[in-house]
Amino acid sequence: MKVIITGASGVLGSALRQAFSNHQVLSLAHSRSGDGLVKLDLTDPLGVQKIFNDFKPDWVIHCAAERRPDVAEKDPDGTRKLNATVPAHLASLSKSLKFTLIYISTDYVFDGTSPPYTPLSQTNPLQLYGQTKRDGEIAVLSVSGATVVVLRVPVLYGPAPKNSDSAINILLDVVQDQSGKQYKMDHYATRYPTNVVDIASFLARLAAANNVTLPPIMHYSSSEPYTKYEICLVLARILGLPHDHIIPEADPPTGVGAMTRPRDCQLYTRETEELGVEGGLGLSLFEEWWTEYLSGKGK
Image (cartoon, rainbow, N blue to C red; front, side, top):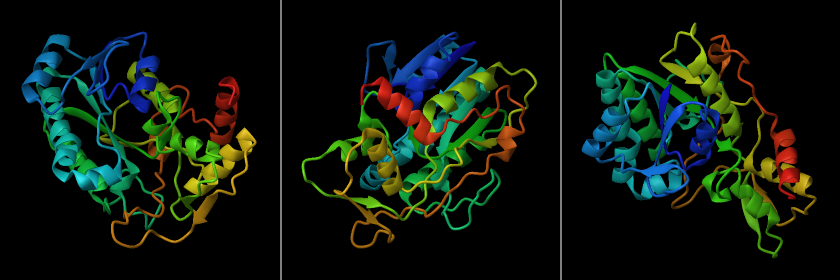
C-alpha cells in the first residue's frame, strides 16, 4: 500500500509514519527536512499535483494545518488557504487519482454547548480556526466522486519532536519551570486529550481492514475529561514537582484579544467503535501513558 502523509513532521504525522512503516510512505513536510521528510508547499497546486501523480498513492492522510487558534486569528488568509483551500485540492486529486483521502479535522468545529457530539451533529465553530477546519470539511465532502473521510479528533499528545508541537506536551514545560514564574491555566474548558500513537494505530488497522465501509465522517477521541489545569496537576504528580506556581482560571476568557474557546466538545465515538476494526479504538489511559513515557525518559 502506498501512503502519503502531509504534516509528517508533526506529532500526529510522526506517529503515522511509525504506524505505516511497513507500507511505502511519502512523508511531506512544509519546513522540516531530513530523516525521510520531503519538503513541499501544499499551497502550490502544480507542485502538489506532480508529487501525487508521480507517487500514485492509495491513501493520503492529510494532517497539515494551522492548528493554533491564536496564530490563525493573526493570519486569516493564510489559515483559510491551508485549512480549507488545500484540502479541497486534495479531494479533487482523490477523485482523479482514485485514492482515499483522510482529512484530519477537529472537535473545534462545534461550539461546546451541547456535548457529546455525533458525526452528524450541527457544526457551529466559535473562532476562525474551527471555521476554517469546518470549511475544509465541507470542501472535501462536496467533491463528487472522491473517496473522502473526515476524521475529527480533539487535542492531541504523545511522543513529540519538541514539546511546543503539542498543546498538551507544552504543559510539561510549565510544570517543570520552577523558577518562580507564575502561570495562569485554563480550568474552564473540558478537553479530552487523545494519544497520537492510538490514532495512528487505529488508522493503520483501518487501512488493512477489507470488510469496513468507510463513513464520510468519523470521530476518534479519548473519553477522559480534563481541564488544562487538571492536566498540569497530573503531570506534576508524576514528576514529583510542586505546582503552586500554576494558578487555575475557572472563568471563560474575557477582554481584548481573548480567544473564544468552546466549553466542552466531547466527540461521540460509538459509530467509529461499531465499524468493527480489529482491536477497536485501542485508547491509552492518560495518566498511565504519561507515567510510563516519562519514566522511560528519566523524567
